[in-house]
Structure formats: C-alpha cells, structure tokens
Amino acid sequence: MSDTTIQDRAAGAIMGAFIGDALALGPHWYYDLDELHRDYGEWISDYSDPKPGRYHAGLKAGQLSQAGLILKLTLRSLVECGRYDETDFCRRMDEEILPFLDGTPVSGPGGYTSQSIRELWRQRVQQKLPWGQTGGHADDTEAIERTLALAVRYAGDPAQLAAAITGNTVLTQTDATVVSMTVAYGAVLGMLVQGHPLNSHLSGKLMRLVNRGELPFHHITAENLQPPRPGDPDPPSSGRFASPDALLTPSYMAAAAIDPDIRIEPAWKVSIVYGMPCAIYHQLPAAYYLAARFHDDFESAVLHAVNGGGQNQARATLTGALVGAQVGLSRIPQRFIDGLEDSAILRELAARLAESVDSPV
Image 1 (tube, one colour):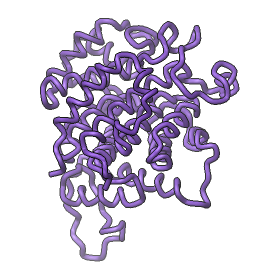
Image 2 (cartoon, rainbow, N blue to C red):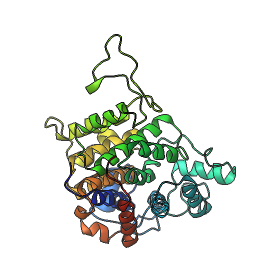
Image 3 (cartoon, helix red, strand yellow):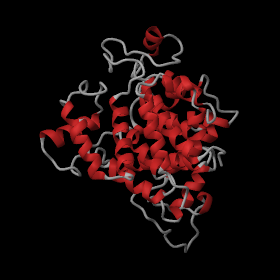
Image 4 (spheres, rainbow, N blue to C red):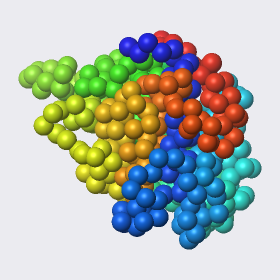
C-alpha cells in the first residue's frame, strides 16, 4: 500500500487528469509524427499553444479542452452536492455546455467537440429527448474522462463507484463493451486512490471484488482464473457486464512494463504498439502500460503519453489520473500546477473532493 494519504492520492488523480488534458491541447491529434516534430520539436515537455488550423486553434497553452471542462463541471457537481446527483449533473450540462454547441466538431467551449457529445447535442437540443434517451455508440473514452471524478469520490466503495459510473456513462455512451471498460478503468483508479499498486496482482484484487458481488461483472473461472470443475455451480454474479476481461487488462500491462524481455523504447512508442486512434481499446492498454512503467514518475508518464501523437489528449488524461493517484498531488512537479490555467480553482475543487473520499469499506 502507498505511504501517501488517501486525500493526497485523490487530489493527485484529479489534478493529474487536468494536467494531462492541458499538456496535449496544442499537439493534439497528430497522426503524422514527422509533422508533430516539425511543429513542436523532438520532445514536448510543457504546455503549448495549438497551431492555426488545428483542433484547438485559438486556445492558449495551459487551458483545458472541452473534455477537461466537462470533467471540471462533473467535479463541481460532486463537490457542491456532496455526492453524485444525476439531476444536478444533467442540469449543468444543459446550462453550461450544450447551449454553446452547434453539433459540429469544431465549436463551443474548449474547441473540439467529441462524437458522443455531438450526438448528445443532437438528441437533447435538436430532438428534445429526455436525459436517459441520449446515449450513442461512440467507442472512445469520452465518458471515462469525466467519470474518473466519480471513481475518485467513491474509491472506498466499489459497488457505489460502479453504479455511479455506469449511470453517468450511459447518458452519452451505451455500447455495453464501452460501458464495461469505462467502469473497469474507474475501478482501477479507485484501487490506486485507496493505495494499492498498479502491478500484476491488481487484477486479482479486482476479481475478488467481483466474487463478493461488489463489481458487476460476470465470470466463470475459479480463483486465479483456474477452470471450473465438473459439477461446479455457476458462480454468483452481479453480472451487468458479460465478462471481467476489462479488469484483467491492467495487470497484463503492468507485467509487460517490468518484463525485461518486453521493451518499448522510447516509451512514447506505446502509442504505436497499442494504436494511436481514439477508441477505448487503443487508449486503455497504453495508459495502463505508462502508468505502471512510470508509477513513481508523473512527469515521464504524462510526457510519454503526450509525445506518442494521435489521440494523445485522452491518453495523457487517463495516464495522468492513474499516476497522479499513485504519487499523490504532493509529488506532481510544481511547474505543471503553475502552468495550468485556473490552477488555484482546480486545486481547491480537487482538495474538496478529496476530503469527501472515504477509506475503503
């Protein structure tokens, strides 16, 4: 278990996500790495302005993308309500985000609008559908990027964590596999906030929560993934999700990160190994790998996430939260805090959320 406090780790997870988002604002979505290097040099090490004609053109170094602003909205809702209140979250989206969009990709606060938020706008604003009938089939990490705040808030209560993240995710993303992977990421982040290391044993701990009915994943194998024996009953399942495989991924990535026969050098090339695109099944393995490899080095983790190109904003946000939860806010380099716009406000929100995080039940 980590020797930092649970409040330091909780605040570190939140600030790590904001920092990752802002670091990738300028060099976001370069699939041509030669073009990335021409625009930003061989190694990106700090916040930077987006270039003209790019996804966030007009914004400035250290500002948040739209995804970061929605995370901030979610965080404010949690802090001001003291818990997850779906009605409050939806009201804030109706008042603070959706009126400023027009359904096109490059519009509204924070520059680029993701596919699932554009679909939300069409269903909520154009078609006047009620919340709960607004989810779409985008397969990106859009919901993770805001529900990580729910994972931090309910880190000590895995069942409540899973319920809150599931409920919030389906407001914008309804594909069952995407929802299960989103909940799994939240469960991993919750364990790191509790103080568990991201290593080859973490998935086993998550599976024990499944066995106790605290995480809603179906499973058919015995302890340590051993096969069932003839005559064994069907294991008990709280089973919204078809399999627990999304909970097994992080430990495989952690094992790869320390295996001397498996080397990804330099580490930013993890984006090439697992894929540069937006889809959740490209993003999560890369984030887990970087967060395990640089578990005690926040700067290296987020900068390798950014320098990998492609959808580096999601990669850096997810990695930043995972490593921030491991090192704690106290060990995030001060220059990343100082360069973040409205950092004092964000730190206060993170600290207030951290105060509400309970120890594991």
